[in-house]
Figure: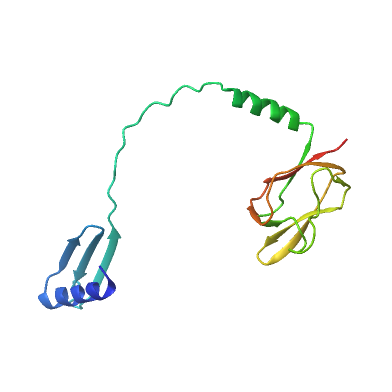
Length: 161
């Protein structure tokens, strides 16, 4: 139901003298109230979307099985515990290059020192250089170029040794 149809319905209800009309259709519920107690004519329209509710049967969760992938993932997290994780200080879009035609700031295997620029994060049209707070070697890049990042999201793994 579009706005013009609703306006025509309001005019029709006002002329008919009815004080309240409720209309329910497939996806819309409309209530029109007219004529207040003091005799002045007012019109109140409420339009609510009607959404069908589907109730699905609830099944109990299946017991968790330990798979080889889970074991490998646990051992991988143990290996990463010796590395320092550099996290995003802000929300925005991460860029690994200063401009599209330039090389990336850092690659896996590069040695970095405190103060080196690792990437740029654009937030609200401002480009913020993200500098390293540690010295070491880049072990892993966890985020792709031109991808959105959240606050405290891991960006790089650095081996401090």
